Amino acid sequence: MQLVALNQGWSKAQARDLLDQAVAFEPGYYHFYREYAYYLLPKWYGHPGDAEAFAEEISQKVGGDEGNFLYFEIATQLTCQCDSTDSDMEHLSWPKIKEGYGALRRLYGLSSLKINRYAHMAVEAEDKTAAKEAFDMIGDDWNHQVWHSSAKFANAKQWASS
Image 1 (tube, rainbow, N blue to C red):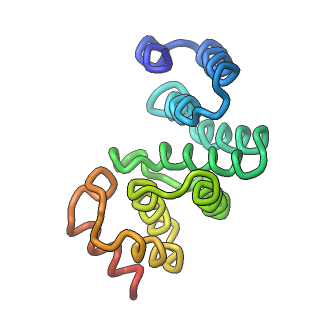
Image 2 (spheres, rainbow, N blue to C red; image 1 turned 180 degrees about the vertical axis):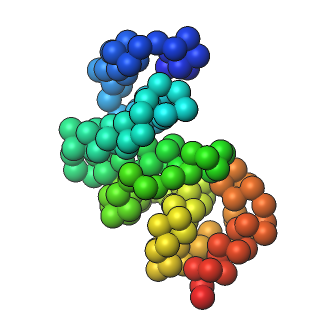
């Protein structure tokens, strides 16, 4: 339904009501939050900073590790590597992303995709220490959805190691 809301251009109030209904049904399903944040991007129905403010709101509302984890997941949506015009961390908190990554590790464990996304955001945040740690975990298991080419991955990995 969130995809329907996006494609049909539902008002923000309608889209938020849909999110609230979904979260009431299954509050831990992080994709609901990611999809609403996507709806709030300026290329759709939001204004600059709306999606990032939503990430902060939800993180605070849920609280604790779960709230930090949700911030991380929303950040991965907002810095989507699928479209370079979306990859902007200007209005996101890098320290909160790092906290969320730590919460992800504690709560659910890490997958190759999540580590690759974190490495990409660490490069964007120019945090060589965090990036190097992530690249060490990735090894040669780079994700094409995140990096698009082995050259881009290799360049980022080399930067983190320098």
